[in-house]
Length: 99
Image 1 (tube, one colour):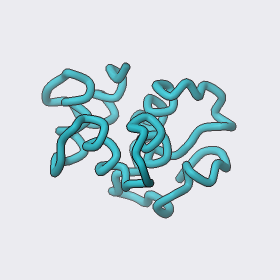
Image 2: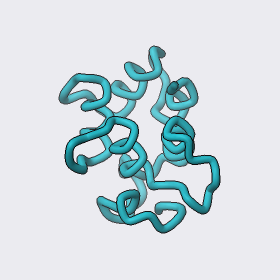
Image 3: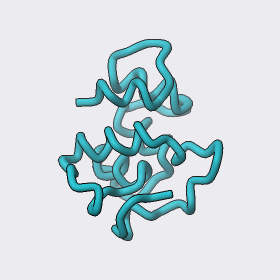
């Protein structure tokens, strides 16, 4: 569930259990790399990924991360590890290394 009330950040639904948007560390670190440090202004993971990737139109979370990485078809953990220059970490853990 997104924190804050930014329309762009609320794209893509609720991000329920098991979804790519249900990654609290990922959301926090995506907001960090787009210089949002106040939780009241945080975007959800999908919105923050689209801002970070500078996508021409909104994509889902994994699509935006693949766009940022210049790839297609990678899963969430794989694309987060690629962007973080890490290996074998889950998405939340890899996101700590985003810069």
